Image 1 (spheres, rainbow over the protein chains, first blue to last red):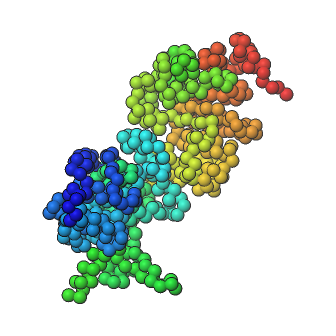
Image 2: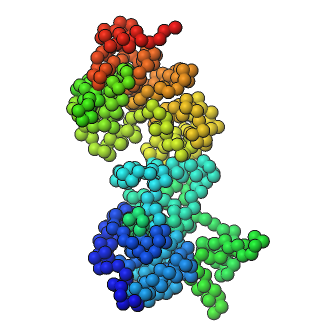
Length: 279
Length: 256
């Protein structure tokens, strides 16, 4: 641990401000709470929101796991994990079951989460209506009045153009039958895991200066049409490393002749299954 | 028959300048009222104020809802105002690009208001959108085309379809045919006349074109400098104008 920094990098007043915003976010599921986002030693888009939420939550006994697109060993994940190991001295892990706090970019772990775990999402654009309505004052009014017909315009366009709802990530959800919410750019494969999850889910958008939350066991509904219901992605392949047929698969090009393989995006889940198979 | 809309002593000022001053009129169900006047005479200000898009400086606007209850628009909350605009009213702008959502297809434009009312069945939405495109004489095969690929006249017809699809009781139109060439104007006016009769809508239409008033409106209001200078049956006003300004307007219409 680097002694010249306060525990978990941020000063105590900043962490207190963040915690107050987080409490408000948990009290109003799906509502975007403004907060005073700080400069972090990390560029915008790399998880400045998530890292601030994690810093505000970390205690000395926490065990931290960081994933990026499901993997523990990618640049973003390694950097953030090492960052907190240095400025907070907390224990880190790559095992989902051992972690008390998981910061994630664009995935929810395959291993079911528990009540004593918190998942922190990195969010680039917290406003699900933004591509349809550029005015912030207007989107806030739409949220206040729960006037969400506009979101279906986007889904309508998908079906009109592609024959099915082609939105495959950052798929809009309605939280607790009230607030339209961006689940962050997770694949829609992960949307069902948001619904009534035992773990607390917190979302931080550093550049946009917004926090929001999905408390444990909250209803989360993915939007759809009556005759075009919500569906998750499916693959004809199994993971080539662990043989899983129920996890989210990444397609990896393995040579310069276009050969490809499908492997689990969740490296911890895949590794555990392979270890079990060998044992 | 009881009125749909009651406007009493309505004024809207922009600081020291007058937008419109002391305007009163009644609008009955199924009636089309034209507001004519030169540019800068306060027509559009009046329309926006009546449609509760601008707050009045003085005066009242009352609207009778579907259930027969009168609403005082000045005291309406933002939520109620939007509900009215969504469920019972329509607004057609002069420039179709202001009233349309340009980055989504024509079909989505028509279906948007239905989705805002909670319709969640794609094939049903699609069917209604297609039938409305045909009603405003747009080829239904262009349902998935962007409105930007439409001509000006088609865009205006698309905006009319998008506004009327929810069968509003009251429609506000701000010079819907200005900026279109004469033959297109004629077709749109013809279309509007047909739809207004068929659906039994009430409408307030702002125009600087007296021919439009003669073609569509039973009653006309003439405005100058923000004030109403003459009001009455359209034929009476156009054939026997009393106020000097109206006489000037009528005499300046080119006749061939």
